[in-house]
Amino acid sequence: MRNRLVTLFLAPLYFMLFTSGCIKFAPPATTLSFPETKKVDITFQNDTIPTDCRVFSHRLTFTPAGGTGRQIHDSLITNARAVGADMVLIGLVREQLDEDLEEYQFHIYGPSAPYLFQSRWNGWKFGFNDWRNQGDVINFGINALQDDNTEYRQGLIIQNIYLTCRPLQQVDGK
Image (cartoon, rainbow, N blue to C red; front, top):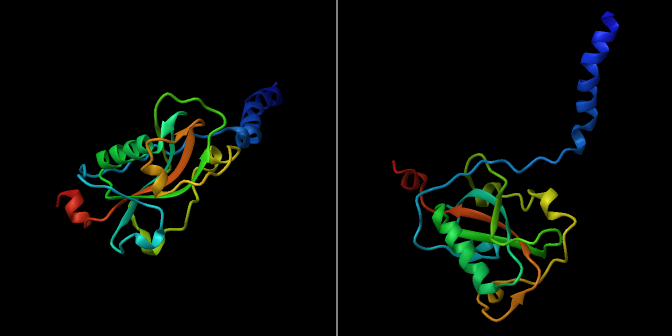
């Protein structure tokens, strides 16, 4: 009888242990933000980031199909301004294959605390479960963001990070 109780108790634990690798976890819900900013610069080049800027948000931005470059630009700027970003660095952009969104989504992957871009940025090492198995990487630069005429038939996934370039005492209000 005792062996049967042990088996009944341990069986679910073994099942959870062996199937835990199959479960897809959502990105961390950590959302750092600072007072709203009036101006946000978008860049595609690491070497344009000033030395005092700190990364406070790793993101993948998901766009709905049918948007123009200007609409994507405006959505990124509005969201970045609202959470206190001074700059947005954009990485690669690829087409979405698996979702038909009606609005922009901003998936956040940390960090848990702001860090200096120049000394600690290690590249686009977040959001792999959402990034992989999607469509083609597309040519998307500053000219695309200013384009009102080109409509993207597929939704896009945009690698980006938000940075604050103000002294932390200023953004914390101390």
